[in-house]
Length: 142
Image (cartoon, rainbow, N blue to C red; front, side, top):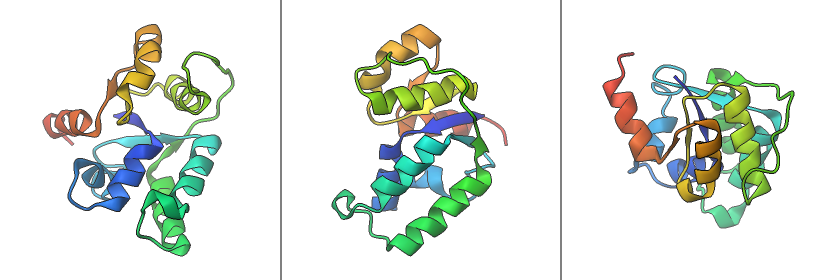
C-alpha cells in the first residue's frame, strides 16, 4: 500500500515514542506494511522542518539525516510531471496532494484532514489520520 505522510506525522512520530505516528515510522512498518511516497520538494520540507528547533524533535541534525536516509531507502520516489495547483488553501498541502495523485497513493496521512477535504473529494484520495491509517494497516496482511 502506498501512502504520503504529511510532515506533521513525522514531527509527531519523532517527538514521542508513545503514539501511532511513531509506530508508522518504525523500520518494520516502513517498506513492509506500506510504502511512503516521496518527491524532492516533500523530502526537502521534511528535512527543513525536522531540523527546526521549535518543532520539538529531540534529534541532532545528524540524527535527522540518518532518519531521513532510512525513510528514503524505503520510499518510492515520484517524479511529478503535472501540477494540479491551486486546489487547496495551503500551497504546501497542494504539494502533498500532487504527490499522492502522481504516485497513485492509497491515502494521505495527516493530522490536518480538514485542510485536504477538497482534494479528497475532487481526486478520490482518502485523507486519514495516523490512527485511521494504522487501523487499516493492522487489517491488511503483510
